[in-house]
Image (cartoon, rainbow, N blue to C red):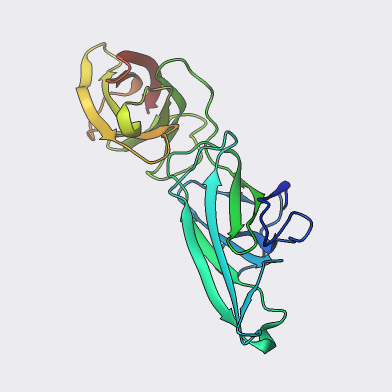
Length: 282
């Protein structure tokens, strides 16, 4: 699980690079607290909790009063990051100040951290970046631990786009209907993802989408130009936003092919995207 380790030392009269063995050990990414470290091919999903455990070794000990008082002074920061080094969520940082007893000769501080992964993050490779500083030894050590996020794969787009559109039999289904055919009185469900939209200050996004449906006769069955609006912000830039469609058909709905037009507006980027999809009532 270890990608890289980099240690640097600040030379003073108390310690030197040759004297310090500061290290991050017994560390890894977990699916739940105190669970085994996840295998290399494990995939978290957006919105999952990620747990991380680590210990610190090789720290300096300050002795006072002829070794009667032995102290350590450490700080650490743990950050979940993307491949570019951008934090997914607020880093977790703290200090470790402790007095050691004679029986603590082999003791190492152990810390546990958990993160709630962003909900609207595309699949890819990420890592947990850990930095530990030894204040007495004037040393610093860092280490990266990789993890993977599965779920939604997003194709790069210069402006707002609709991806992964699919008709569903039931709301919440994951698998698309091979043939989007319904009976009169059924509810037509569909889902899609919006990507390529622009972000404002503080990673603000502002989208709205509308839809219309034309009957087999050519007459308008449904016209909802502002079916939904999505406006918010997030710590990590949202890479996609999900959309849903729910259309209830009457028991006497005409049979044949219906044409659905979906229009998405990016209000910050001032762009729009339109796509047409067909479903049948049999």
